[in-house]
Length: 137
Length: 108
Image 1: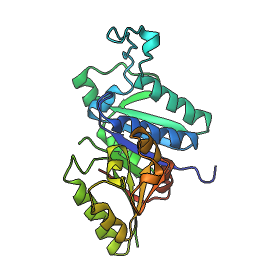
Image 2: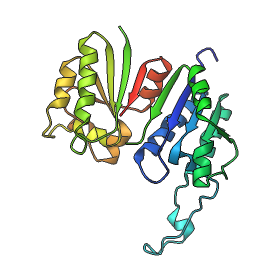
Image 3: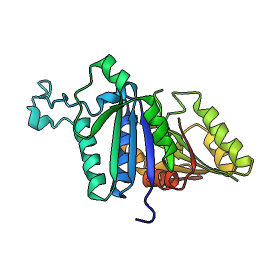
């Protein structure tokens, strides 16, 4: 693909806390649909976005069981963008900051996520056409 | 002339520093740069036609292209016809387009 691009995103927000996580995954999904190569460096609470231990749950207040509640799981969104990129000839290199993972006990991530350091973010940015940092407030 | 993409996600009625970001956009445009200010999430609240907020008009007058994420507008019940002068609804794809073009991008 002549116009194939490589984009890097740095994410910092934990799931379920801010619309930034949703917007970030929307952006990554658009790039994945184009078959771009996508680097993600997840820092701080963002290492929980691909956390494998996320579970759908019922909502007794609404009288819903887990299926009716249909609770969104960010780990599934991460898996989806990884698959979407691969389907379109691209790839997602998702790196979780190792120190952030250890601090939070977030080591159990979905397939396709690897552990790294801020040095990986530097290398990602150096090898990309562009980089977008989405910081916490 | 450089090209910039400034992404504003915050509500100016909630965060005073939004006006500093608008000022950055205006300043870059006045110096001859090509600047897009992309409003997303609560950042689109400033784009309402009837909002008591004049700062965005000054940004448009400085020559900044102002776009508002159509998904964020829909979420908040803001219709395209209710946008302030100088603001256009746009898909989030524009952000990826401009990143791919190599624009200098800042998220606020």
